[in-house]
Image (cartoon, rainbow, N blue to C red; front, side, top):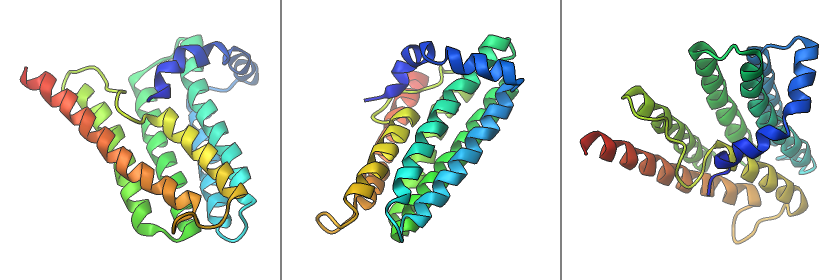
Length: 203
């Protein structure tokens, strides 16, 4: 399961937004910064959702906007022919901060800090193993159970469900279960990526 494989399909729908970005004079880095700003807002709404579940709907919308902007910055860089290692580096750093802000907001809103910590470490390690493979002269690894596109989709859907079903389900809220899924699946994905890279290095 990884929506990252559908990026070529999504890219076809990006053209109007890339055109708009060009007309507005936005740079890929500016779009990346805008994306992290949206992610921080989403994290804040998830904290507020701890007292009023309606905020989960706003958070879900912001999560999807963050994911869309994350696609636009790369497409815009290709359109303007300004792709660079510096831009790629900035994008990945900001994506990790975005992931942390979103998961921290979700965990703070429901007071599940241990699950939040496990989810954050799983997500960060997944991304780290993906790029670390490239650092040792392998291809960047996007495979595994859950990639970033999958996480954002699950977050958006999960937050929407949390607004509809705010009460506990078998001892935890929807958000609590979502964090548990990210904690388990994140670390499993990290191990998968480690195995792929280590096997390639020792073959």
